Image (cartoon, rainbow, N blue to C red; front, side, top):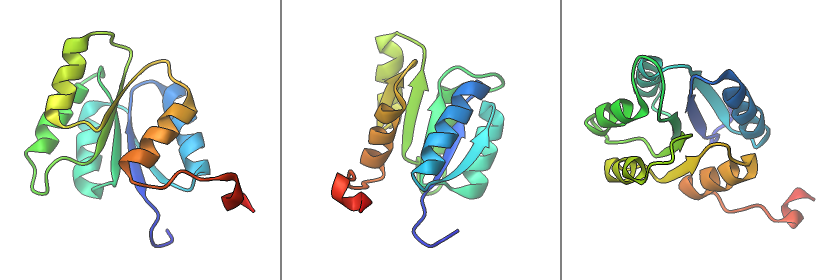
Length: 133
């Protein structure tokens, strides 16, 4: 991996969403790690210490909330996190924000919205068309 490449851990049990996010984010130059349930996500997050965590709320074995609670208590604190969910409840959003998530995105979402959120959380300046020349 070249120096300066940011690592993103995707934690979701929906294969289609994982593959869509992976394709778009790898295309933007990020290193992508994947976990398909909360327990695996927690293990990978603690082992790899990614720059960003994109975490589904509702998953088998351990919910996104339990993953957040566990990571929040680790040395070094919570990894910057974007929570994604199909859940409409405002209480869930409030709890996620209380736990420290940087953004909360409801499914389904446009991949460009996710990319903008990732760039904002990682403090990557948005690309202008001139950057592509």
